[in-house]
Image (tube, rainbow, N blue to C red; front, side):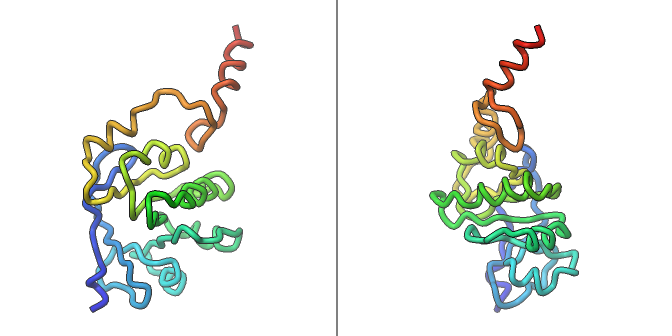
Length: 172
């Protein structure tokens, strides 16, 4: 039964707020799930990309080139898989989608998503975070607001802290 690998995210944060997740996640790379809407492996989505009830999830080792990025622009939602919390390649994929290719839709982190990573994920362009089952919502929301200032530029702030301070100093 292919739909046995179909799951709903336990906890989803979108733009820092809890949201009911209506999208199921299928990890079956052979068969499209019957249930819609569904997030499916990239290869299946590419085969059925005209199906508006489907969205792709990218494995962390996806090589994002211009042709694939252009194809992905047709999807209002892209999920990026974190197979282990130590695998940081998903951060790069999200940042490339936002900054290089100008993707405006939802970028969702799925897989081994821990509270400790959420702030950094949001700085790289993730706006939806599907927490691992053992992660608590209140901890996640606190973690997203843990830092008020960032030194480095990110998707959310284009200037480094020293650049902002220089600019503000020159205006006075």
